[in-house]
Length: 254
Image (cartoon, rainbow, N blue to C red; front, side):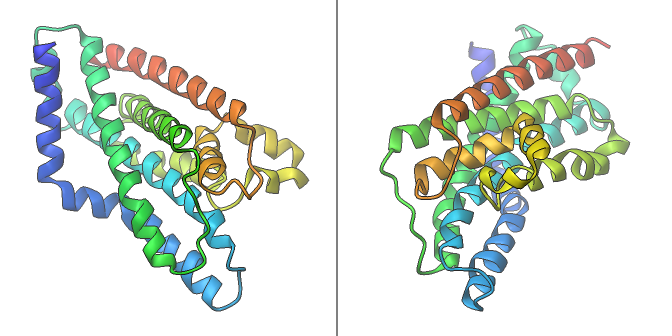
């Protein structure tokens, strides 16, 4: 446990040292989307004012997913294939799997920080007319924790599965479809006219993240039932975490 906490403290120190760069890298795209869709398009009348309230939960989910995935996947790709720093960590007196668990916890924390930062920032950028509430704080907290675990677990899986020459493909073929078909800019019910697609996207954990925050922050909009949101997040977390552990162990013992 002492070794585990020491590694977690080391990752926290690295994250603090690169805090500004990491924050800008993680929040730049969501903040641009907030400004364009939540401020420019609504102020010009091309989108209704209430779209701001619909968009904000999706932006929080997007920020957390991106932060969690990047904070775990990118260092792992570098440590396994560029710096080989992972070899020093593997010599630590603890099971290999605990090193992967430490990566997931560190990524979850960074994901939560990104969500906490983007909520007031996006609110300020959007201006007046954002009708969100925290009437269900415990449900919001539970969803945020699950989203953080899901994001970090996806990062673990990708970081141990993607080669150094495939980083671009990871963003274009994996992350981009997850984001655009993750109900971040629209509710899941908007896909009712596409029955096949509406069922296919339920395999995407970003859907449950976006719909989960929408159900707690803006329940006036249509969203998935809470039981299905929690079930989807729990199953996604378990699937990607176990798959990530398997891939991490396979990569580590080569």
